[in-house]
Amino acid sequence: MKRLIKSRPILAWAFYDWANSAFAVVVLAGFYPLFFRDYWAAGEPSRQITFWLGLANSIASLLIVLLAPTLGAIADQGSLKKRLLVISSLSGIGMTAALFWIAQGQWGYAIALFILANVGWMGANVFYDSLLIDVAEAKDYDRVSALGYGLGYLGGGLLFALCVAMTLKPAWFFLQSAQQAVSLSFLLVALWWLAFSLPLWLLVREQRRHEPKPFLAAAREGFRQLAATFHHIRQLRGVLTFLLAYWLYIDGVDTVIRMAVDFGKARGIGTGSLITALLMTQFIGFPSAIAFGWLGEKIGARRGILIAIGVYIGITLWAANLHTASAFYVLAGIVGLVQGGLQSLSRSLYASLIPSDKAAEFFGFYNMLGKAAAIIGPLLVGGVGLATGSESWGLLSLLILFISGGLLLLIAPARKNRDPK
Image (tube, rainbow, N blue to C red; front, side, top):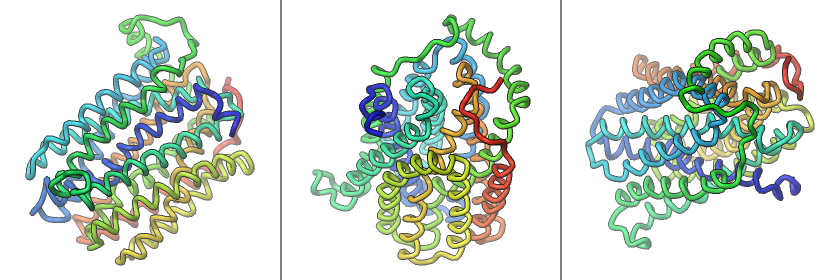
């Protein structure tokens, strides 16, 4: 690991996780669902609020599903991965900052900006993930991917801790109220995301595997290549089976991340307890993600992923009957142990299976399937909860996704650290 940290491109690449994880934890998992329920949509029925949150996440995910493969193909043809990452990041940063100015009761504007910020964040991740093969050798994918997730947990957790302190003690920061502190947190996330993206923008060099083309020419070639890629993926049994498995199990993970705070709030758990639990998840997730990188090298990335899926099945069963803050703390700690590891090993396993000269394009499909699952998951939890009058039934529906994803991964062909032919 010391050898990898001394590499400036690897460290610069990994620090983008530090940068954009501020959005993931402070906005996506933390303050946005709380603020939406208690401020922007205050007074609306609880299950209706949960449904709106699920719908917003699903719309953002659907947009990425439609855009990611095409943009990935264009990026590969034009050697535009880093350039499109910058554009997507700046879009997400701008929309996140704009949340600072949304007033109480303006839940429609809050939803619209959240969707656009989410699209920018997820879109940038398409190109960020694909740059892994430009900064690391195949033998280092597990550890480099884990380093990124580890730094993401640490960076996101540090900013979240600052934002939590601002909401608990606003006077210490010359603020008038907790509400003002939460609004300011959205602006701080945007500034943090921007500042710590600079190392990647300045130090990571995209390797040219095609002769660069102008954008319009790259777009035309990208559309032609897109159809060929569908055919190519169907011929690569290892890639296809993994993508189907990933599509299912990552739905459960993404839904837990996006809806856990709202679920806890609906169960009557206090805001302070929910925030504390999220902080626990972040700081436990930092060493755990690094440890999973080591575990992936020792027992294989696929076995490591299967262990994490098994833990998530247990988490889902337990959470369905959760009613106390202490139980939520324990659950958050267990999530922190496996969440980053499952994500990092999934990314590195996929990187080892795909052709290196089509990385952005193939990672476009990777992100597309992950976000396609997130179209279903939040709507499933919100819709089933609304229809049955029970949040527990919505949560238990995630078991289908974890179990079927794990079974598919079990039958997937063995990992190969070379480009498929």
